[in-house]
Amino acid sequence: MKKNKLKVGIDISEMNPLSMNRGIGFYTDHLFKSLIKYTDLDVVLVERQKDVKNLDLIHYPFFDFFSPTLPLIKKLPVIVTIHDVIPLVFPKHYPSGMRGRIILERQKFSLKTVQAVITDSISSKLDIMKYLNVAENKISTIYLSPAERFKKERDFKTLLSVKEKYNLPEKFVLYVGNINWNKNLLNLTKASIDANVDLYLIGDAFKTEKNLEHPELNDYKIWLQQYSTYPKVHIIDTYPKDDIVGIYNLAEALLLPSFYEGFGLPILEAQACGTPVITSDISSMPEVSGGGAILIDPNKPDKITAAIKSLEMQSVKGKLIKEGLRNVEKFSWKKVAEETLLVYQNIAP
Image (cartoon, rainbow, N blue to C red; front, top):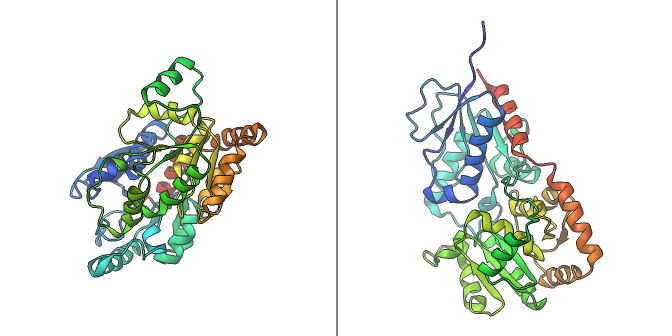
């Protein structure tokens, strides 16, 4: 008799609506679609925790440290994805308060009874073991992948249209991402100015200046005071998804000199577009960039500046582009789906 398909629920019931438009939402959406496309699983989205009838197992695609997102009582085998542990590595910049500390202990207790943890990098895996006390044999590292739209654009008219739409100069460097402390906006902006190059910062997070009293945004408040009106610093906070591909293709380099990344997806997006990458020599960034980037100390703006200037040498630039394109070929959502399926099969009842 043919065995029924494994039925898996991707639980988004506790996901913050803001997260759906950011990295967690990107991961959840692409994971869900890829599992449907590349496996024979029966996969459903769970929007309310009581909607778990007839499931074989349930997957929580994110883990909040200071909000009770993981149930204490589990009626099914559970997988949880923990993308990084940044707030635990840098508590000074991500203070939790008394309530947050209590919820963190609750979340850590709930983690003890999950069957498997998925994370994005070996760097994150080691930190999950250290800061959340999860056993190594419970954790699977499954690398992410950029969306398929990120590629070298060979249509000159498309690139010219994007250049004119955003009034892009002949030479500029690019930052894509959030405004949190770990993104190191102050140093990357100073480095760009010292290199006398235009800097374009792209991200939905730049749309609003509300709620800037949160401690993790202290550096962004300083950044606004120092650089928001600087003539060579430009923000693009509203854009169609396809336009960012053209912007990557036109950029001299992507700057991602973060103090910490659980993965660093913009690295692969840039490499897929044939754009040189300058990123940090710590946490997951060397692991993800795979030799296709200039690695620098994020605490030293002069090193970032020197890396930008080094791209004036075509031999340096050409090598980075070549190595980046080679590196990004190792990542795919098909691989994410297949490796996630193995985790499910290992814990299925």
